[in-house]
Image (cartoon, rainbow, N blue to C red; front, side):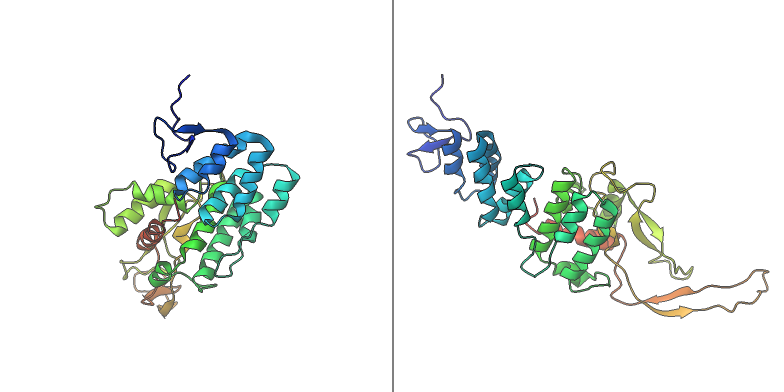
Length: 295
């Protein structure tokens, strides 16, 4: 039997680093020793190993719901979801889903627990707009830049945990970072959208004379909201943007000399802060990539 410590064994006498002469402290005591470490990744590994030690380990994970680190709290939350012990259910019910900005994410949790993916997607948009103080509106460039990482982190954790790692901002962040860095923002936004199952779509108020902003980006209608959708397909950040129509051109509803009717309203001019399409998608990706809390 080897006397040398394994990679994640706790060690006595070496200030959390292993030397050949140090004594190895394994089992539940090793888990307890590693949890106070500063390194978040090591703490998360120790926390996941705690569940190997029965009730004592389960109690450690429950206690971690009150940890000073939000990342540790949510790691514990993810480990406890799906467990049926009464004390686990009570602990999860008392776990706060309110951000420092005062936004309550329990409505999103409920929809995700129920696997009502489409409603959860709609609720996510409402919550992001609320976090940006743009309720019942759309996100401008400056709104995206000012979104609090904590709010984005909570939304991400809920989506990631309940979708079994298929959806969430962290999944979208990973996909975005895999794209060529030298690609321009609009090209990156388009490439990302294609990858996750979104596509460009004409707006309802197109003008043949305004060719620069004819397209926004939407989820493909042939892809259902569910776990079979492509990774990163939800939440639909592509639909966080929007705009305001400043003026219209209404052609007369009379027969033209070319033999057809001119009718309907045509877009004439959008407000300067209108923001949608591939550029908006790329902007949101940059924001979540700038949040170190989102893994």
